[in-house]
Image (cartoon, rainbow, N blue to C red; front, side, top):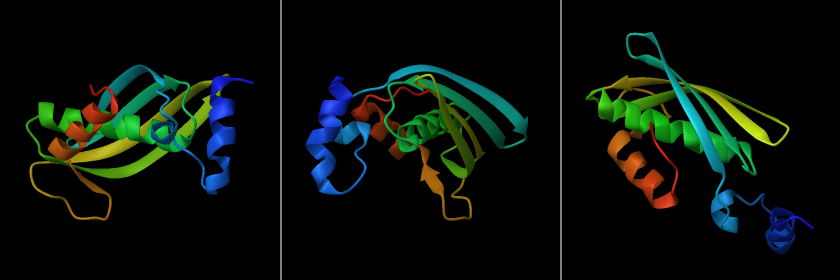
Length: 127
């Protein structure tokens, strides 16, 4: 049995899909590509191996977006969309965020400094 499968068997009784954090597993974070689409609209293409769920890849993209916002002198970002797919054990995320100096409107906003700190705690790399 693969280590991840054994770990899944152990937490399977909890009734929820385990995340990488819960199992103590760390994906191999491979790459981040950033593309400025228009003004404050940014596309992040991330790639990882060993993720267990789409949430693991989504977090990686969020970490990249938060760091990118800070690099550009902004404190906030707003999630627009993320598409995730997996093929042959390689997970790819295609996410779009807006970045801004003030807290943007919307439900899926992030404070870039807080998110970057959380990413560091979890061992998720940023841009």
